[in-house]
Image (tube, rainbow, N blue to C red; front, side, top):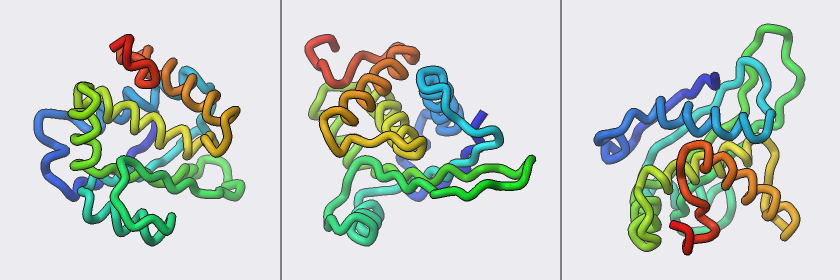
Length: 159
């Protein structure tokens, strides 16, 4: 189990959903597909809005616009035995996630799970800078989502 430090800045995230349970389901499905997670892992997850996400995106990626998910991996040095390992931070923007889900005719929570898995994979060292990396990351996301009963987001005709 991953220790998730959850911060909710936008109350719309909490309406009708248990964010901690959702995160744990996504983390568990991802770990089952990758086999990668240090013991006693910690992740901070920020559930925010487009305005805050835009600031983070501008400050950390030089892109002055909101985005659905941001990941900030921690380049961790070896820790003493028994100490928790901080993997990094994930930040999600409500309005962008909602508009993408609506535009793609995808259930909000299904799209959210995809983005959580995507962000978590970045914390585990996965990336999509080139076609080969993207293929590995996307197939891992798809397999993790299948474990959650969610259709392949990269093949919308199957939805």
